[in-house]
Image: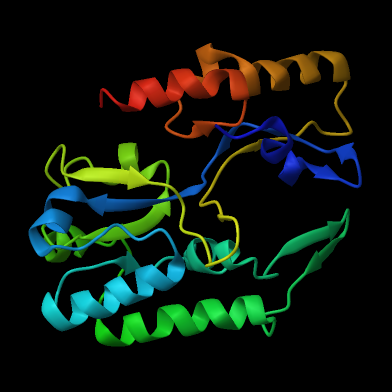
Length: 233
């Protein structure tokens, strides 16, 4: 479960709340449990282990994937989990971008060799050819929680995929970017701020609203229901 102080982090600057979170899109480590057993691989828990897995796959099972870097959210998959300051909000009107930070360069150094050896593809998971090329070649993918409902149905056989905790850097607590996730704002020009605030609260907390979303609810009280719903998909 995501604690409340985490779910509101993106909406809170210097103690002031500027928006309400609708849903989160934190990354998980998705993997094909059947292929992992068949190939004799262990599910990695760190980014270093993931890189080693990719190198093994390239050497012994070429054509199979451990990741994709072909989408506009590639930075969310690999740079954010490394705590790279690629677009950190540091003030109401200020964003820090410092791609020369060691936290950025270490992530690039991790992913680049796997792109070169083919275990990480540069093709988008939503491209017109991804399913034809990789349907039975997905060993693992780092991707958001909504992949389970939006990407994998029809792409891989039902029951083959499992989700593990986000990968961590050795010696550090796990961190994750988010591929999407919605925010609700109220205009400063709203004629009825109280009604607008009530509407935003309903949209971001009511199960009548959250229950039809494929995104992991930011509202803690709705998260258990959402997870239970995913198990029957």
